[in-house]
Amino acid sequence: MLRIILINFLPNGDIMLTQSKKEYFREILSQRLNELMEEADKTINEIADLKEESPDFVDQASVESDIDFVLRIRERENKLIGKIKDALERIDQGNFGVCEVCGNRISDERLKARPVTTLCIKCKKNQESKEKVIGL
Ligand SMILES: [Zn+2]
Image (cartoon, rainbow, N blue to C red; front, side, top):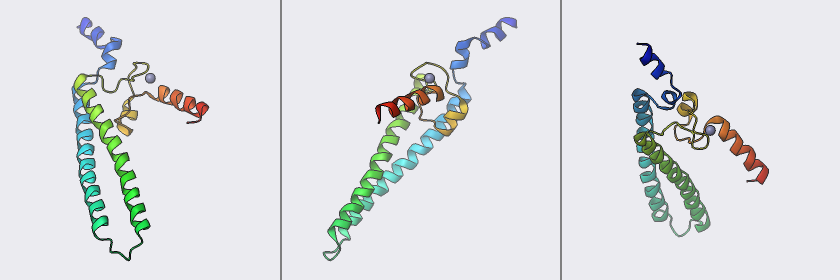
């Protein structure tokens, strides 16, 4: 009995996500991914519509800027889709929720707010202050 308790308190045990937490995050990530995929489809249709429905008298420049705007949203969506796929892969590989810089566990609160994150709050803050110094 004592042995089991000890094993549960090993620091490594803290790094591993429990199965139910894994499933929980897999669920929200998959859901978000589906939503984004649908959005992406819509975006493609929107662009097609914009091109099709713009008669000659419509200011071409404004159509172009509309398309530009839609494409920029699309780009952001694509990046997020990639991040979500990475996160799902990390769940499968078992390193989801582990900071890629310091190797510590990322807090549940942070994961719930931002499941695609790969940095714990401390490393994220470090990174941000470094970016500020470089002027990014
Ligand atoms: Zn960290």
